[in-house]
Image (cartoon, rainbow, N blue to C red):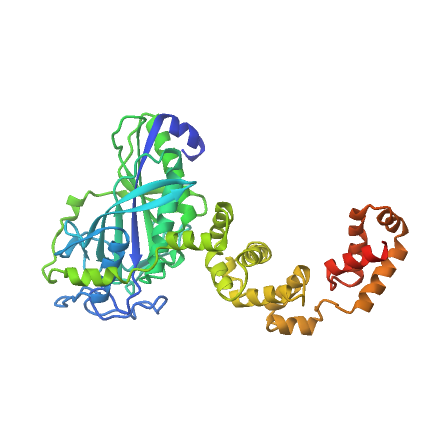
Length: 497
């Protein structure tokens, strides 16, 4: 069917999309949610386990207080109400990476509920309503060995690592997102990006999508245009990048439209997102909540955060990322487009740190979004992973402003920084990059350029000052770029009247 999917524009002519997003945030607590096992990423398989997180008979769970604290702070940041009393529940299902055959989660009594988050897409604000943010534990990790896809179908055997089982999770569930229309894929991406930024600002998770510490599930349905009803939804699981969230919504809208257009029904199911081909494939039929046979967890006492504690935690909330961006944009004097490009390039924090190190905002932005972004692109890495620090960029800019080097020579300094040749000052000295300020040497180079270009010199004498650029270029070439172009221009005009 993938070859016959309608265009995105065609889908919008006949259908209204509805989305629901579920974001799982893996907390950075030192121990798991219900036991004392460590939570370090990348440990040897099955070395960070105990009878409790392995679900052995007789093992009793104890709630991680830091996990509860993080849940409350996340709920407050999402404008949620915080429950005065809530409890855990058992979500019952059989799956190999759930050693207890149930997941300790929350169901009808979450710790945070009825919130919202506003996101901006091309100047338009969309309010995403949050149904709940609840506490639960992560599952283990299954690795399917053999076969071509890495999935269980066609695999020779499977391996289970329970190190991740029991790690604290916060699941943030939206209400249906309606009315986004053509911007639905962008709204989904913007929402996940905003939540991720918020989580990082709160300091409760590193929120690395590449390591699975924040994962997004995308629920989507289509309904006939203007009907006001909700169609049958599918849930695309564990989408692991912001770009893929956008692409998954786009693809599923087109796939749903193709199925409905053929007179068939949408199957309520989970779907797998394939990063390499940008398509989804069928997973398993999706159960409704009743099928999980939720019931209150008998081995854990209810959680009843006092109002005083909640207000204490509210006071710890940081400046929200979007408010910080608005404040710094005003301080820096960036236009909306300049700010959007800075954020889009992943350079916002780098520019902020470079400014803090002493560089002017526009100069900091210039280096990160041009020279350094180009080099990062050539190496296939994020600009933040390039290996040049904000302090070094500020030092390079200070050398430019002091007249020690110019922008062209600064590029060679960045070559030296990437090669590990020392500080910017050391690189300038070792490579002999300092601008020539010897008036005698500059004057001799100008005289030579005039002598070698008599026609251009005559034009300048006749009043065509714009022709001076050619002589300046000749001098700069002679001086290997190590001359002050402004001073060279002054000398040219002085000598030619």
